[in-house]
Length: 94
Image 1: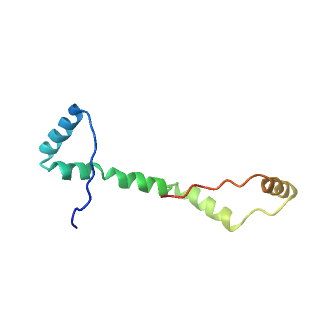
Image 2: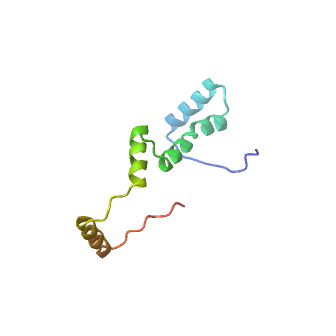
Image 3: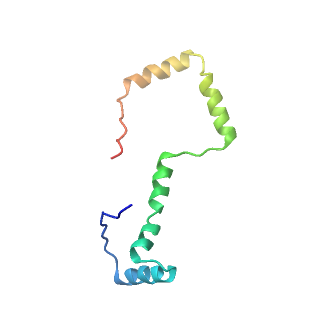
């Protein structure tokens, strides 16, 4: 795949020298070194969209969803109170 986009950044001279030195030690061009280092972006994106839980917790949650609680007076009151509160909308991903 052709590299067509350009990314620029500003860094302190010492940090820039260390990055260039690290790229040289790794036997990579500065571009390849920076792109490898930036692969952490994929980890950050994945962690924002993925939740990992222990299997027993997931099984208990799944079972609870399959058998919701029966309506009772306390639940009916809580639902009625919740409907009086303003709705908060979640911000959309850009």
